[in-house]
Image 1 (cartoon, one colour):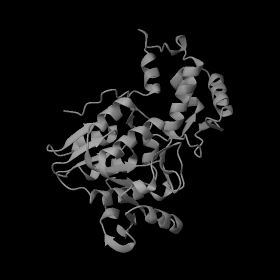
Image 2 (cartoon, helix red, strand yellow):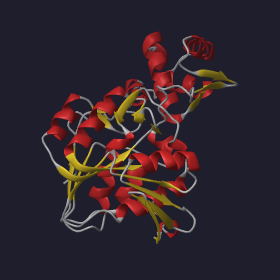
Image 3 (cartoon, one colour):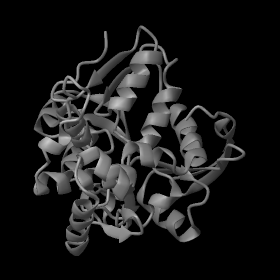
Length: 318
């Protein structure tokens, strides 16, 4: 039976618009007779920018059933408000903004080798028969793909893709608990319903993906509701393991989920610079740095360093 998705809200704004564009008996679209109001249209444009990173005017014209001029006017308004950046033929997200949140699909194409290697190392920390939590994110999704053969595992998650892969490919003796809630561009389920479900449960390990990490701000996200839900996940576990490739260092989202010191272990890749390594190693009990090509892992644990060998670089599943 597929995990329940109470309050999923999984249909995106553009899906809703497409559903409204029903065809008449002659197969002609009615979109032109039912135009989307300006404020709703601009909200939908921002959703697509955040999900995909950029949009084209021609695609928006087709999706929203309005004129080229109307779309360009919408983009100009959003640009003047500082919500996106106009580019030739369309618009793009303002990546340096603390509110910028790329969608799951867009993030899945970034740092793939690093995420695969990080996920493979994280999987070695999972013990059969235990209960763990996985936050939403592309690196935690890669981890989920490594956990499908772990016997007797119970997984609490607010991630639709994580729940899907464990339901589809996992063992029959695994239990998957999907929190429910309102869906974000990163395919996280968030909000009061998700928080209430998570607060009632307790797990051994929490694996957290993060939008950014910084010595002063800790682990952050551009989505305030997702931060609240992730704080509930963190509180549900005995230990916190953070999965973050080196590009996350120095990125600061609008809302903090935990301080660096709140993590027991941080797993990242070997491209993290020396200054950042020192700051992270001083804050957490264990820092694991994996080489995405060789699979070699350098571990700094309570002031002591050692090298390990994992098959992280050879496994292309994540």
